[in-house]
Amino acid sequence: MAICCGSDSPYLINHKEHHVGRGWWHLLNLLHAGLMKIDPGYSVVQVKEKLGTLRIYLDGISQASQDLVFACETESGKICETCGDPGKLYSNGWRRTLCEKHEEERSLGVLFRDE
Image (cartoon, one colour):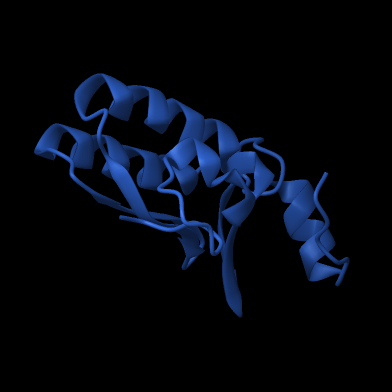
């Protein structure tokens, strides 16, 4: 059984939004909808950003669901993790998938804040 933020309750992907940038939340919601059609009993081990894209680790899923996860992770490399606009993977020390605006802010040292 997976635990979210110290809670004793198992959780699903749509409860993990606060673990990644707001720009990727819609990807997690779409993935959750797809998983509920294929493997409604799935559980989340971990959802995080790693090397600039989403990483999603689940238990209790079929190969079809794993294919959905892979597609979601791949798509996150094209979407700004901050705002959800089209983006690309930047590698300037840390890898981040950002739109041009947020990459410019990052390069100028502007702190990231939830929008």
